[in-house]
Image (cartoon, rainbow, N blue to C red; front, top):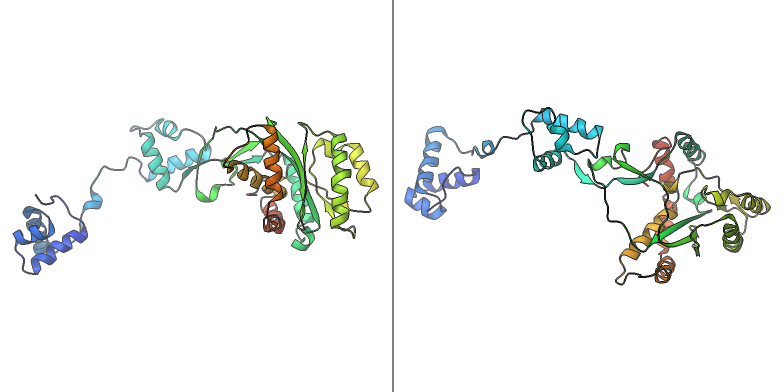
Length: 343
């Protein structure tokens, strides 16, 4: 039995073409695979009304969420990205919808379920400090940033939580405040390391204890920072970057830097600004490489060896590209008026 029901525009054109070519209803049905009734009806509609288009687009179940409903759903998302859309949408509505309808509607509106970016919670005071730093360095070129040595500590864990928070957002809303999840620093079972680098070369990567105190950091500064800075910047035009961790701001550390201020300068760094520190992206490189290992470390000793090996093999193009991104990072902070950026 041939195909029955309404045909697409292309199929209707084939029927009309076959009949106009002189084929009988039976011949057309056999050739095209449609029923004789369908062939007769379509050709009759063409002869009497000149109809060649299908009404298929009008078929099917009526959409449960009209334009007004979509506007309502959009307002609910703007109010709370992580809310259960279906439950909230159905409140006060005469006709309720299911989760599948919600997902279909949101995708039609341009939203997709994404994991929120995790960013530091920046206070009003620190936003001002970040903005001041960006304004003070907005005219620095890549050549200027080549004189900076970047440093930081990071912890790498043996195991990771699979818990995820998902939100609804559009493609260009990844850094919208309502699409972010703030984080704070936290410890965990793993290996903690301190590292530094500049545009010229990767610096040392030093395994450290669970907590870094001022005495331990003084040893790092004298044993690693000092020789790196005097070697890379013999003209005393180098800048050493460190964040505002308590051990970095201890009196014995400040006094040590004062004693060596004729050899290099300590960059005055704004608080809560990991997005301005390109070394954060090197930690991401190490993390990705750890997760991509064929054989994952099963103890802390293996984990430490893997971290040191990955660090030593980071390409020059990788860390130089990060330093070259500094002018763009500064512009991003200026645009965000000291707030979070995509970095």
